[in-house]
Length: 126
Image (cartoon, rainbow, N blue to C red; front, top):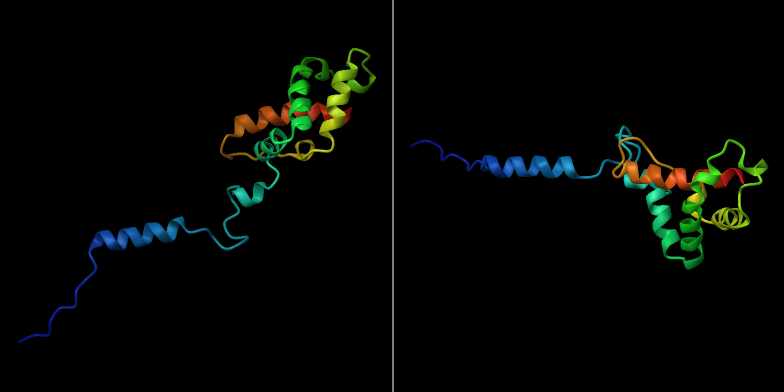
């Protein structure tokens, strides 16, 4: 009589374990080829969420969005067509995380992030 065969794990269990290992987060600093949520600490999407929670910031961001055509001139600080309301909204956003927000290639919702960035970006130079 031969030795009893040891039970082998079914292939499905092995595949599930491999899948679980692939989904586990990498150690800090490993695999930096794609941006992760931790690397996007001040993404424009997160910054806008914070801003929306503050009524003053929310109103300033909304108003700055309506100023976009006025602010898109090359040197808005020298342009007298920039209204005082737009300048005030830009000033209010300088104290928010929106003013330094960033977007990264291949990030989730990249288009939304860039829309937020280009709404706020002209306010940096005012």
